[in-house]
Length: 361
Ligand SMILES: *Cc1c(COP(=O)(O)O)cnc(C)c1O
Image: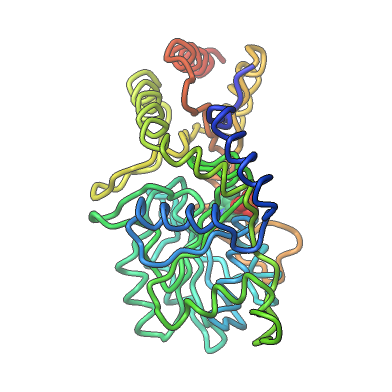
């Protein structure tokens, strides 16, 4: 069976060495030495000044919203994983969906301003598939209207835009280190911000707003992560280069074999160093896509409908807002298997099954 993804696992002995260290110390969580080591190595790798390793890629969105004291309406993208809009709802704010750009599948910056009202306080956008949002336009709009900007950079680990980590944009960027992502700590996430005045707050918010014996500052939450998760990160981080290189080979193999007379894919930004996080393809119709899915399933190949449905159509969203482009893409897009070690012969086989499926009625 070939799944859309397969989690990278490091050398077991190396991980067990860390586990034995943890046993010897008897210190399992609460800002332990491995967590601090991982944070410092991540800062170095990503070239960012401040980074807080947290429990997962959803709690960091919630902490980011809290830290920036965001209330009311939050402009966001309908084309993302539900964690993005769920975090907004969980923080008692209202997601205001702005449709995506037809070519990049990221929030369309030209549609943002018409959705701004006196209740709008922030923009929360996703760099979908690791492709950068139009960060310059978004920043200009945010400045003009005095809005905060959070980027859900769950897909953007290792991506550089204009020679700078994509995770360093916005008031706060968040990342996910879930087992399905390019770099993982089993479960995990991070908060990244260049605002010095936020740092103390972010570190406190992830740990109950409490420090030491008697200092209680505000109502924080438990967004911490453990030594065991940090150890997995320390084992995996040295492999990120080869993971991305292997993904690139698979990416190129799909690129050169799929039938682009019939299929489409999102436009890839020019000024980037990419991480090859996902391989999305868009089919002419949902019907064609479903037939391809069936043909792949017969061969035990399981792609995923990332991202479907368009988040604005979820029944629990408080404001009904049409996003025709996102709804249309979401119905027709599939992410194909992509992970380190997927043999190129399998990529060729997958491409051949898809091409054949497209040409047979
Ligand atoms: C994976 C993902 C998340 C959530 O991350 P978790 O670590 O699983 O909580 C959030 N946003 C996007 C866009 C994601 O793909």
